[in-house]
Length: 225
Ligand SMILES: Nc1ncnc2c1ncn2[C@@H]1O[C@H](COP(=O)(O)OP(=O)(O)OP(=O)(O)O)[C@@H](O)[C@H]1O
Ligand SMILES: [Mg+2]
Image (cartoon, rainbow, N blue to C red; front, side, top):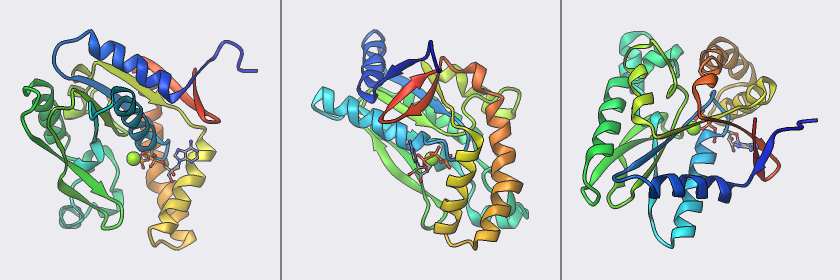
């Protein structure tokens, strides 16, 4: 079973990025895509921490796509709050602009990047600040979308792309649990997953062939599939 798939640790994944980044002038941008609940944020933080640990200092930082969620107030005004998480409920243009700025800015120049707060369910402006870090790990659902407005402009800004693949039932279970933790009733959580998250997951799954590397979590390591 799984013959032919290669197992790779988080440290090895980080070392792969370090080698590529060392061979390039300026900032190196790794993009991690995958469906909702795949574990992208967890993987991005893991790679950042491994890079920084091996370097003995902060050479990498995470730039989450989730920081570009439209605010709940904006979505309410648009009558779209129920679709939160769909591609058009983000400011994709602003994400592309800031990613480009981050790539092009000289190291040391301070650049604020918004994050997303799952407690208040809204973006946090300036949640993270880039300075000397020359490796950017950007992660989110829609990094590899094609023919979808400004999302299509993301791929050329990425030096390497990974797709984190997870079986659909696993995602479903994780998302239901997360919505319940976020305050929904079990029934409302299941409805949100079925009517919103899984539609988004399907769209994202179609972008998998565009990634340089497709990974699946396997125990403490990952498998290249
Ligand atoms: N390898 C794993 N095994 C089990 N649970 C995991 C694993 N990776 C992440 N999780 C859990 O799954 C949930 C989703 O993880 P994470 O937030 O990293 O996913 P994500 O892809 O960033 O999701 P989203 O698209 O919604 O931001 C979290 O509750 C996390 O603790
Ligand atoms: Mg995430």
